Image 1: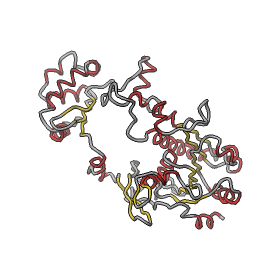
Image 2: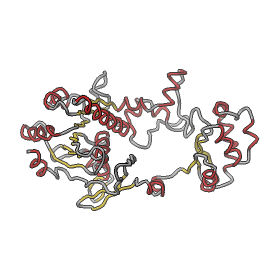
Image 3: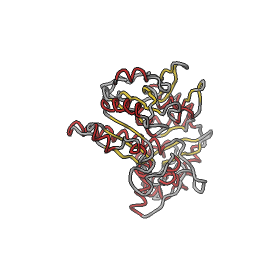
Image 4: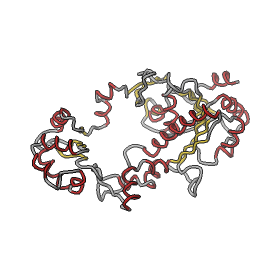
Amino acid sequence: MDGPLKNLLVVDLTRVLVGPYCTMILSDLGARVIKVEAPEIGDDSRKFGPFVEDYSAYFMSLNRGKESIALNLKDSDDKKIFDKILAKADILVENFKPGTLEKWGYGWKEVNKKFPKLIYASASGFGQTGPLKELPAYDMVVQGMGGLMSVTGQPNSEPTRVGTSIGDITAGLFTAIGINAALYDRKKTGKGMYIDVSMLDCQIAILENAIARYLAKNEIPKPMGSRHPSIAPFEAFKTKDSHIIIAAGNDKLFEKLCNILNIKEINSESKFSDNSSRASNMDELKKILEDKLKTKETNEWVKIMEKEKIPCGPIFNIKEAVENPQIESRNMIVKAYHKKIGDFKLAGNPIKMSSYKDEKSRGDIPDLDEHREQIIKEFN
């Protein structure tokens, strides 16, 4: 892939999701990524479904465009190979439990002495410091401990996980951001840097309105379904055939909405005349709006509201979301090649850059240890 990170070499010691997601972003931005996997076993996610002809779609969706070499970092011969790769690398990314790489002689202090320009990024469940640092964590653990599940779901519902692995993904994103900032810093200082990202920290960082509400007002937010806690109308409403999302985030948009629904009179009522008043009377407002919205189907309302530039939309399932013409026009479904199964479709890169073409194809999907011979030959 061509991109702003072209000619940078990333050594990828990660597995499953948080780390591979980070290095996938770096690859999509042009970096060369060498994925170092455990011999015979490889990345754990190679065994995660769904499968296409015995190959993990989960693994393939996160590891396109990377090269694979299997190395045992406890073995002296393999460590020599690894050292030679590190000597030419710009970035090392790992997501082992804190302390693991130190035992093998590849902790930050040891690596920094040998390779002072190397940027070293660690993504873990709880970070490298604090009383929980040695504990393992998965996505749902940090969703729960980070407060996210406490504000997700319907009022009085059972604890509800966000429908994607946002604990891993946000940590992968923040790690990629940290790496790019460290690259800029290295331009100025000539020195590498250590980056410590905790999945739990990242959940706290994305709580936005919920954490602001607690820290400012000492209120503990609860699940509100699709409703926004401080903007109204801003939720899912029933129509004749399904639901529509309406996000009238200011008074002018609310006035437009009232005109479309032929309820101009409520716009002047004190209960609904400004956002604060509407937010205090959400239940009553929702009943008034749904009485009107139930007269037409969702698609009809979407067309009407789009003409007036009122933020709205249907609720798509995954098939509908992926096949949305807008998604196709933005090149958000791309393909990668696997030598056994051929082309494989996957999500594209949402970062569009004027200086680089957003290709429809990504790099090939590696089998375990597929690039061993050429990597050893190159770095020896």
